[in-house]
Length: 194
Image (cartoon, rainbow, N blue to C red):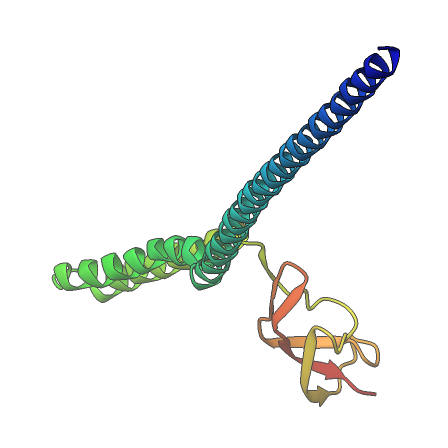
């Protein structure tokens, strides 16, 4: 009997071992499926994150391009309309000249001397308005007192002058103008030559 019991015990043990092995194999298969699912899930999550990152990149890139285009457009508008303030300031001298012409037509009955003095007054007022506009926009007259400077003066003739030294400006023939530090037009002058 003991041999039968031993055989029976051995069969039970074998069956248990087989059952345990089968259980281990099933568990291993389940674990591998869980691992595969989690790997697939990870891949799906990473793909979603990649899509989000790409979408964010494309949006930022599109925003950048839009800003770049807008700034380019604003730059060209600033260049096109840079003289707008100056042009507005020149409207006052134009108005003054037009009023002078209108006053001349209205005052035909005045004597010639009065008409001439009013016309002179109108021209002086217009010149004053021009210089006011120039001053607002940093346009200044080139100085012509003293020595000749080829950077700001254009010598068109040389004259003898007992009152001036060699190379000094004798007479300004035409005013020169500067815009801030840049020369708009050189002053036309005559210089002394001894």
